[in-house]
Image (cartoon, rainbow over all chains, first blue to last red; front, side, top):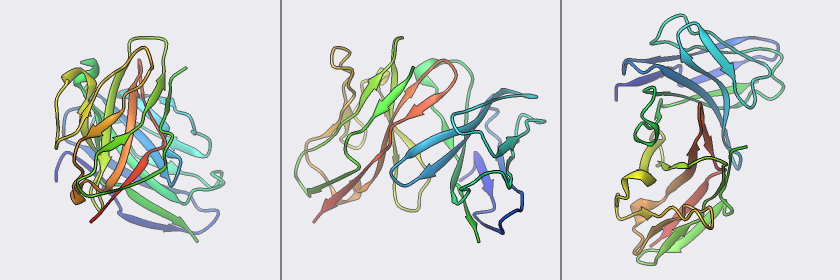
Length: 115
Length: 107
């Protein structure tokens, strides 16, 4: 499986610590996304970026931060301000434009557990 | 505002029976709809998109603008269809997902 990679697969964090989740893609996609997946709640958008050096808040951005310094990379930092960070985090990317012909491609995910 | 609703969190059917996973949407523009699937231990992936009007793994989905629905159907369920299914609506800048339906096919 190439395309989009996420690391680590599992991450454990103590309360009060910031952690950074990695997302890399080699698909030459312009847009990248971070979602949080919780049972019964579907996928909720945290942050997204349409272009390098620019990003927008999604529906649940509080307690998270991102950067987009390179086209291939879109790391997500879960800060100590995030009240309920234990979840499965998914990164996705998409080619710009194309409407319904351009779907999002997803990474394998990172499971974050706060101890 | 964009909204996608999947009313069933869990759906269980027997092998060989028909399957229908419901999806309703709310969107002021022209909708671009997708079904994504997540099999056990695999990453989330596209199953089908409304614009292609295709059948993938025996599944079809028809966009009904009058009822604002995009239900996923398969006439004869197979055990390998057991998975988590998400309906999604592409807006101007982002994809909005429904809450998901976990489909279990019983032997």
